[in-house]
Image (cartoon, rainbow, N blue to C red; front, side, top):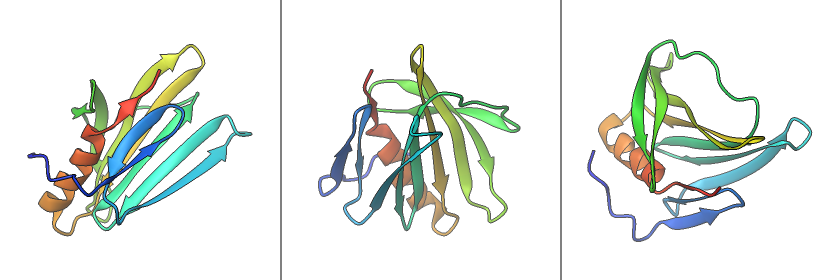
Length: 131
């Protein structure tokens, strides 16, 4: 993929991360597990990016692992397809400390998949996980 022009994008920053996204996208942050898991979902017409911080993440990958480039490091994610033909990259993970982990998920919608993928990968490449 080739990075796209992100000059008009906005930066979202929270306690454990910063990330850039298109200005037209929406952000929603929720808490679960008694507030111990904080999840931020970024969504737009190209797909979604979900960033979760807490503990107890993980699971099996029933397809293949791919490399996911963030701003400062390369992580791995489990690549697959959803029933609607959207591309899903889940279990993009990193241990931050003994009791805090990161778990990410990206969904690329099937319409204009090449263009949508460019946007999603550009968002992921701007992610900085703060230890």
